[in-house]
Each structure stands twice: as structure tokens, then as C-alpha cells.
Length: 81
Figure 1: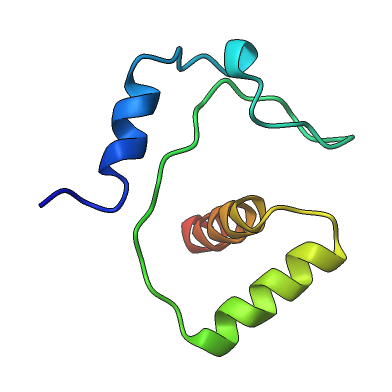
Figure 2 (figure 1 turned 180 degrees about the vertical axis):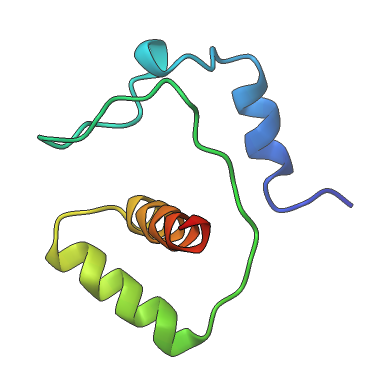
């Protein structure tokens, strides 16, 4: 039995993984462009937390993954100081 993303993974296996070639992510004004690719992070959050995240991201014109990435970075930066 394959995972639910097995077929998608096979389809994307032959595609180039370069940001500029695939052009998957658009940059927001004021954001710094990085060449670091996105990577899946499998985790669970409470339903209410997910709803709040999605609502906040949508209201601020962000993708959910961008908001989560920024929040994790801010949290880790606070821990290091």
C-alpha cells in the first residue's frame, strides 16, 4: 500500500527542483528571497489553532506555511537570546 502522496511524489520525481525553474513561490514585497527549498513538516495542532492560523494568514495575505515558518523562527530566536 502506498502513501496518499505516493503517486504525486512519482509525478514530481522527474521535475526539476529549482525554485527559479519551477517558479512555485511568489515573493512578497520586503521579503528576502532565499534559495532554500520548502520541506514538509508532519505535525498536528489543535483544530482551533489551525483555524486561527488559517484566518490570520488569509487576513494578512500570507500562505499558511509562510506564517508557520515565521512563527517558528521568531520562537527559536527568542530561545537563543
